Image 1: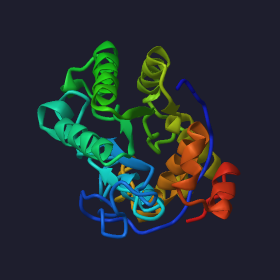
Image 2: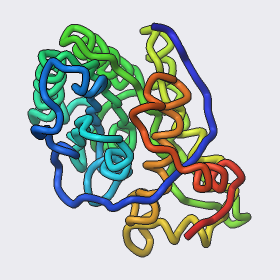
Image 3: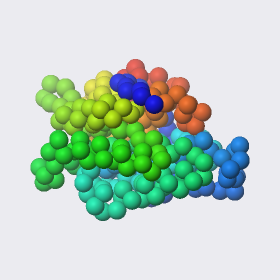
Image 4: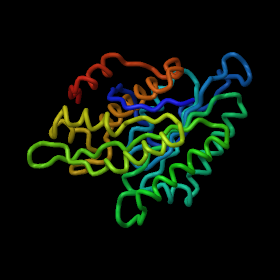
Length: 261
């Protein structure tokens, strides 16, 4: 499968779950090895901009229909190096193998960059690309389908009201890995930049997790960008349209740069 993409798109509302967990958990309503077994499983890996309580991940999981499992395995503060070293990556691969054993198609979305770019991390763009490339190989070896997600924009502006985000080189590097590996990627960085610039500074800061925190998301921000990721995913892999709930109104508002909070 080879689809690479640049998309600007969209968003929805649903509750943010406060703990890292599979949402929803497998239940008797989803018997194994029958026609009702969910076709897909979803696993999210990344840093705090994906993680429960500060990122878009749980709100994306809340969009998944029926009992298809969605595990938000993202960990706050991680880089592409520390996520592996601290055991987060093992959790992801274990979930991929378990889903594959149930006859599902495991889909894995991976988004980092915010902490990798910090000088204290001591990670170059070249190392970042190599780490992402190895994640891709690992997921494929475990029987899953990897997706790279480019970094969610920060909501910082200059004195003229222009978005001033420094994640561009890292987002470009992530996209380049996806192209080189011939896998799908979700261009969240471009989509989120477009939306945040359109709604402007005051509205963008209403999505902040705390005053002055223009990186992490409050529940409204998680709703917006969880919807955006869902819409990007449905465009990149058309088959997931049956697994992800749509919200035409919210998708339209985001695509047209409307501040809904």
